[in-house]
Amino acid sequence: MNFDFHVVMPVLIVAAYGLLVLVFTPAFPRKDVRLLAAASLVGLAVAAFKVVRLHGYKAETAGGLVLTDDFALFFDLLFLVAGAIAILASSSYLERENACHGEYYALILFSIAGMMTMVGSENLLMIFLGLELLSIPLYILSGFLRDRHTPIEISGAICRAPWTTLAVYPNGDVFPCMAWSRPPAGNFRTQSFEEIWNGAAMTALRAEFQEVRPGVDCLHCTIRRDGDDSEDDFFFRKLAAATS
Image (cartoon, rainbow, N blue to C red; front, top):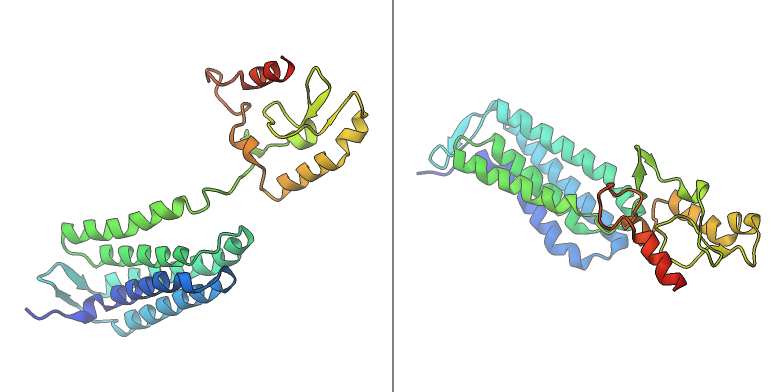
């Protein structure tokens, strides 16, 4: 049985570039990760060139497990273009979020290879393999920015506590909200409301929220919890511990 490499060549090109990007990632510091993005784009362009060259070519190989025709080639080209757009659109965002990792581009390439495998499959086993190759990298990508702190949302709006709220302890300590666990922003025994509200601590906190990087306090916010949450009295337990 002769194996027709033309049928699977676009997928092999994308997967090969994904492996190359993954292997060379440790050799590139974060500031040079854009080179890996460029290499990924080159891989997609080479695969797209091969897809265009295969226009009108219809064949199957591997005992009928995989095939190529104009229908499959159309979707191959669509996936390649979508992947290129994703890489171009995300490069600057990843730099801004300090999440420049070459693995990101390798995972995108592997996902695209999985999509192309599925669309060129003529067997349930190959469809399953393509689905796994597509989904596993996507599972990893879904947690790619897991360490990034984002402000909580209340009724679809970003938390406005630093601009609208102050929580005051009996000892005079002032916090931006009831769930705050960092040092107080001030104390009413020694400062006025204006000094605290417009002070350095609250100003820095508002700037922090505007840059979408609030700290651990928002990850454990009690305000966004359900009414039957057993931990909903966290603030009062903290208050009791602070005043005991």
